[in-house]
Length: 134
Image: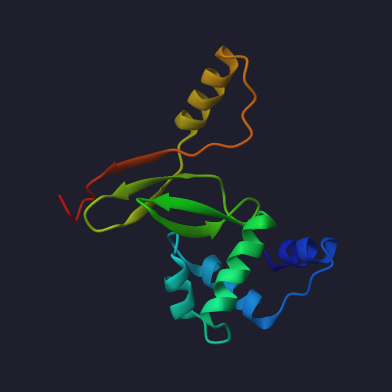
């Protein structure tokens, strides 16, 4: 995965600094999307400003995508670093659960086709209560 990151940065003529690499690794090791403050907590070489600037850069380079959770943003790696997926969102505890569903992808394609529409991106989120909060 770091080869892809290096390729993206080389194409843009940018350097991969230690803080950028650390932020990438934090996102890579996470099982769920993280807020900027969560990422900052796990970083030892990046201050808060560096985290926000790096997240902005990663988003611009399509390394990460933002996940809307209520009025807050969380971040996770995008393709090709993580397989395309959606989320189950617990409205009580805030837990985000990855949802990989070929059925949803098929439905998106069918609806787009029926409307003579070309899909360039999409998100799908189901809100409710997780097993622990029920």
